[in-house]
Image 1 (tube, rainbow, N blue to C red):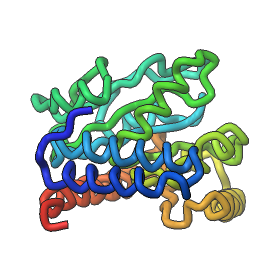
Image 2: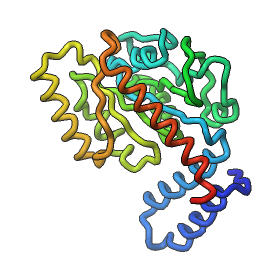
Image 3: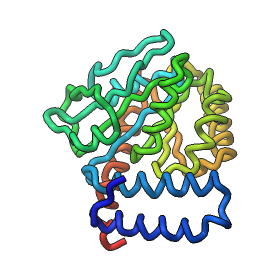
Length: 251
């Protein structure tokens, strides 16, 4: 791995040295995870640091691609119900702007422009379905989930407590460097009591997985409810990433 003489890279090198000195007192799996985070953080600091990469993660039929389209202001990715729906990661970019080095580092080849004039340096990545029948899709999601700056976990009322999502993914995201937001989709299909009960239970499940700080945003790509709120929240996340990049030398 290359590490140029940036402030963040220098700090990462020092942390790596500390991890080496303490290796005998750390569980191998924990040590490997620490070093992975050190490497990713160091490399990410060199790749268009003021850009924010938002990954959209979810299972088949959860409405992930429809939500990406709603956030983008038009149809940019294919939505459907066939397995697997999302065959490869696709980056949705502000029109006419592209962080090429960052996208190369992420390994995302499929790229489209958002139809609207989206402000800010933000990339939205529609990830493959986490429950895809194609094994390589899970590997792509796992790699990118460790590299994005923010994750939106998309769940629907039928499968919000799915074992694959919680046991294989949410528990792991609790230790991710990326912020996590949960989008509860298809709320237009619920009556008020059902919606309240599901939101309460979803909050409980997230808290049990160590995601107490993950906000839940209820949305409908069909009616547009909650889309503006989620868009505003993601814009705030993008500003956070940009501020951290500017403040990194002082930190």
